[in-house]
Image (cartoon, rainbow, N blue to C red; front, side, top):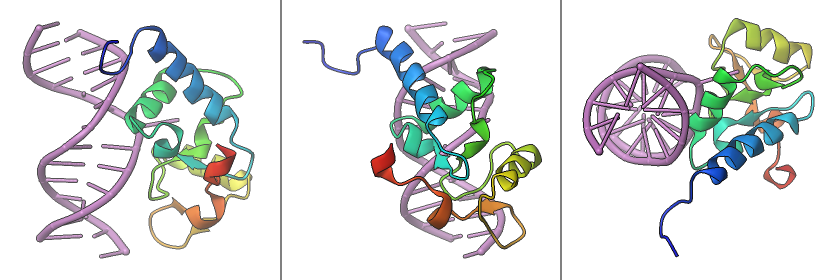
Length: 105
DNA sequence: GCGTTGACTGGAA
DNA sequence: TTTCCAGCCAACG
């Protein structure tokens, strides 16, 4: 069969799966873009940047180092859920405590 | 079909 | 520790 990644319907499915994984993040926890879509973390970001879906916990998705892609607005939402942050100048989530374990993904 | 852009990542300096 | 650079995949014009 055709070698290489299958596209078309598969891409639509991938986008749907990305949204499903983000919705599955429980309150008080986070996941990284790489955890959600390892093959193309930027795709996860691209989806979030374009999709305007009520009830989608986009703020629970952070970078691999715990830093926030959106900024102040995102930090506020995470703190409201009691997500632990590491001390320091830059606002970074403490992934040791808040990162969702792989087996739950 | 090609080049640019992006809510990324990991390793090097 | 922070900053910088190259690699990476997909979307867009």
